[in-house]
Length: 371
Ligand SMILES: Cc1ncc(COP(=O)(O)O)c(C=O)c1O
Image (cartoon, rainbow, N blue to C red; front, side, top):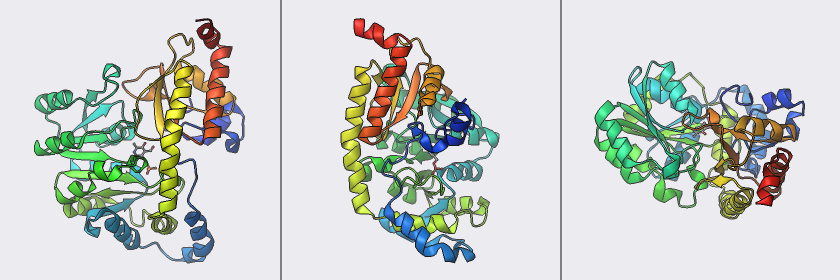
């Protein structure tokens, strides 16, 4: 199984499974900015490698101060981590180990894994296909009334659905007294991010924490870099649990160097505004149901007449050097769903053509063409 270690983007497993060198795959199974790391990342590596003979700043002051300035908050509201993944783990440990945790499903698997790891009792709010996977306020407040979870963890934009949670809903949830964590790992891919993000609210309230990632938008998952924004008390509680020097020097320098690269940001947003609808239309033309997404990935339902399930489709695509995410591993979805990243036009075209070939080979597409 390609998701053997729980995530997409596992090129080592793909190489083992399909007998193709890792560098030869086109990877639609993880959702990175297809422009690759900004030039500043290369400059940091070339210019600063000698400085690796020193320990990283244990308090990550340079990067935290830049992040604080970017969001108009104080440095005490920011904690950097070894990827957003570390922040997810830290917040569960810092807040209420063993507490009841509510999640929307399908959602990013690390929320449930982290909650389980620390003895949390899980409650899930289903996102329904019939509602196009939107989070319904009614079902959230049903869970609040019935289960009274102490902690909520919601993705906005949610992975794998690509939908955002309304700010109003989050603010109402905070008013119930629960501690709310909003994972905004992909929010930078939304052009009016500033209108949607809850970072300023998180800095000002004791029971809201926002998680951000720098690995997706800046295409540096290999360095691991994310951060949390919250009240100084919550940030301090998380920091006390963190391994010393958890954010290495390269990650700190790169984070500082890429922030504020406006040309890269504009280029990314312009590409996505054009590429996502184009790819969605091509996939629809092949018979896939494409769910609305605000970001750089699309949740797809296989064509009704497709005789393959997601796992077999993934296998046949992988054998052709194209990796897609089998979304049946997300709780709440089944073998009719896959998730694909939006990439550059030429790569997207390769995805569409490969899907078409696989469908054709399985008999699906020929049947579709006959009507
Ligand atoms: C929704 C979501 N949050 C957080 C993460 C973790 O990101 P990072 O690479 O910063 O650890 C991921 C990674 O796929 C994700 O999809």
